[in-house]
Image (cartoon, rainbow, N blue to C red; front, side, top):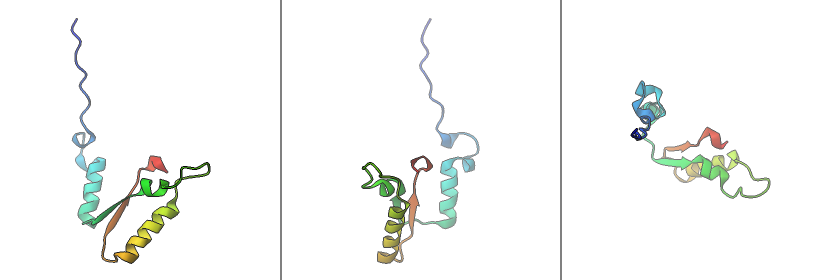
Length: 87
């Protein structure tokens, strides 16, 4: 009996209605609110320097970075993204 190669499932962007996929949701949001000129990786900002016993995901660090961007670049349109699993 021959072993059949495993065929991975199609990526989420090819399943169902594209507007219901994460890619579709992000694309629709960008069409309504864009363009975005800077992207802030919220998880990396929030976890920066938190490698200690009581370290944790820091929303304050994200707010600090976003506030600083607003002060130093008032015409900039940043987008902060993070994974809900990281929080």
